[in-house]
Image (tube, rainbow, N blue to C red):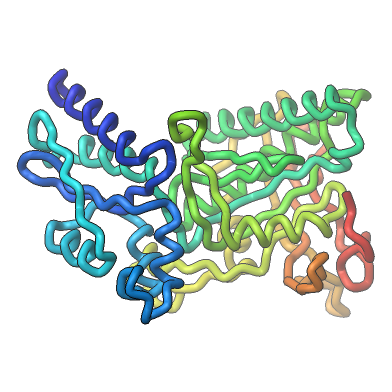
Length: 388
């Protein structure tokens, strides 16, 4: 990319920042023109108002469906000129022209940069995303210094797991957001493989944490509990001072479900939500039977995919096998079923989840056993009262 192109993009960034107006506005879409780009700018609260306004309210645009707004803030933000004009007419918003020093090229890299710029100043909806939540047990009972050291230890485990996966050429572009007592973690990449890689990433984080705990007698390393779920969420960049943050944040059904599950999780437990992931944009037309993927099938695919971690070294010992599975009760045949756990939260709502186990076997060292056994759960599958 030449100097003039870079200068052009810097100018565009400054203009988008001005339209954003310190977080007062949200940029929905963009469209390239010969002499610049068109952007659709609305007040930050307008997205909700468009779907909630009474049909007879003359002060508001014609009511549009929630589905229309959701589709507008999902996926790519670039529109054709005809699409831009249609959306602007429906929302009764006049597109704004940002004049550029030179026309944008059709080069994919430049288009991708502009797309990321626009998304940074707006809201993005993801229909199906895997997220994991790491929670530090009894975090509120620690001293401020202990809280700091345990969060730092968890951060190191995240970075260590990331480095190990990159060494094996396993893609994970992870992002994090604080939950107060830990972190929400997700893969910025989309698709089934990205979601499976996040599940394996959770294994490595927990394994690194377990090894660190075995080597210390202080409270510098946290005891963790973890949850994994797939669901919808909104992604956004919070305003930090006069600029939006570089890092994105998420909130939505998936984070709500994780927060409710973690309240009932035992120390050391790993819970997997009872999700149904939509894979309609990730499969071929000839495989329409796999449009929806439930948690049990997801875990089966994750186990089949585990060979990509072969050769992994943990604490100086080569990993020989990894087994991840959902637990259940022993049947008369000697096999095990998969037990659904019924979690009742503080609001009186009930949700389903599964208890997960991960066993990591190494050459000569003792295996790393993550999660808790099914027999240690209460008869209903969960403790009688939430655990801090």
